Length: 227
Image (tube, rainbow, N blue to C red; front, side, top):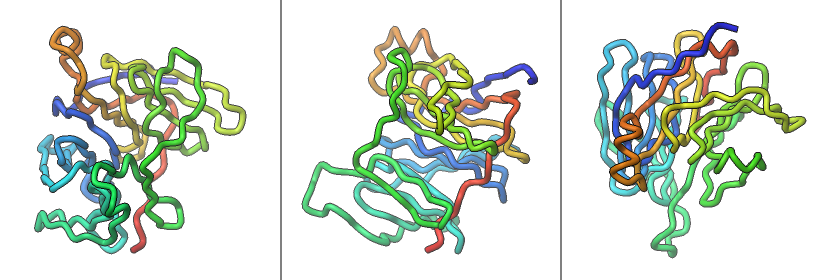
């Protein structure tokens, strides 16, 4: 296994970065900043960032087979036209619950976009803190970002055994995905909301986007919404 390298490729200062998705066609990374109500796209070649601001907290974003993206915004499933920076509502849930919102969302292999208001928690050792966003590698193993744990861990989903731990220089790691031209890179989002000034001085890269290389394993391409 080659040596692991961790670098902050984008000091975005996300209040709560989440839902990283690799866009192979443009060599870019999609992600959201939930409370800032922003969907962002970072071009890994030019290092430029484009941002679209929406009207409610945006908890996830995904690719769409017919073009563009889909996102969960507040309690709405929405289509996002990136070129026009326009949003079209596809469906709304829990209209009667004013303070509710989606918490996360993913597209499954069948092209269905799942989102939930409550998260199932994977049981981990105490020091791992709170399991958050996850992804799967090409060997079928699960990678989990541990919120307030400052790490991503690799698990065998069958046995529950922890296979690998990668520590990051920030505590509030939120999610992860594989990307790069051969999906050998891992991208990790994190948060800075809730940190005091002293904590931000200790962790100036909090809220940034991190790239991990040298893991010795590759990921798989993200699934696209079929609708």
